[in-house]
Length: 385
Image 1 (cartoon, one colour):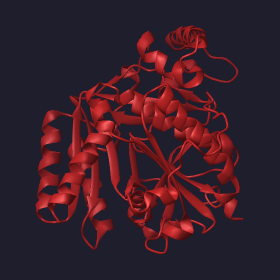
Image 2: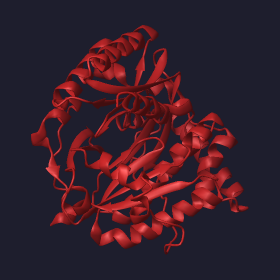
Image 3: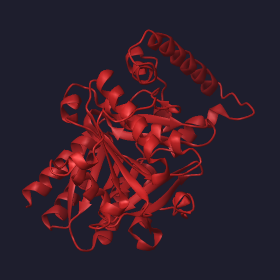
């Protein structure tokens, strides 16, 4: 059955396997592509609100995952936007839930959340959408999307001529969205090295798999191996007790009502309990809390692909200079476009459905991350035409 298409897809285990076409399958015709993004996100970044943007993007994903439940669906977190693929059987309820999130974005966070939904059947008339599964841990598999269809869908949603056909408006029917599992409770994470580097790479040749494979291998080698790339380490994980930071999650669940204060107190107490459990390595029937930070680290989505290679990695200044030199050379040789953003820390937004099981921790570079890297990449593409 097409509804179990992604559930039944076998997973591969190495990022370079994204360059093997045999690891991918076409999305069923009766599915739809959901694309969300925050309009004018650059202004919000300049105002220091990039974490708010990350949180709202994660909200769109979790609201859909709480609808699909047992149906596994592919999704990719992109910092200021997300891509989710869904079977048409749940389309109506997904639309209604996303309208609710649009209203939350506008009334509580003062952001314009753009939501577009396009049938796969429409997209593949121009470009295919191929899906693979990268096994990150026993508790999380990362969707990998290729073929050009996702990039084409983004154009349809953003172009003035086609946007009205696919964008949701606040006039659509809404139902309360379910954000269960969404958490924003960790401090910004200082880089295990000197810097946290957000990278987006898009091949421009007729041999994209070779370009991506070489880029992955070269960046990994420069940084000292795959484990050295991780922008999150257990010794840099610290729960937050900052009310302004914790308030973001409270606003998602309680808006600006008086109940927000009660929810904020609840989060603070939960974090205090979590701090005690992890510090003293308490073990109960369900979880060894001393090992929980390791679980968090191994379920981060710091490498992904959705028609572009996206990475948030830790690097030294010298390693970053070598990466920039390599990418600049590849750009000059007309092999790829790229965008880079440099920070000293990462942001982490979490979806935790089972404390000792199913969870994913979305990673982005602080102060602009993927959003500003994408801006540089788009500038390169524009100047090349």
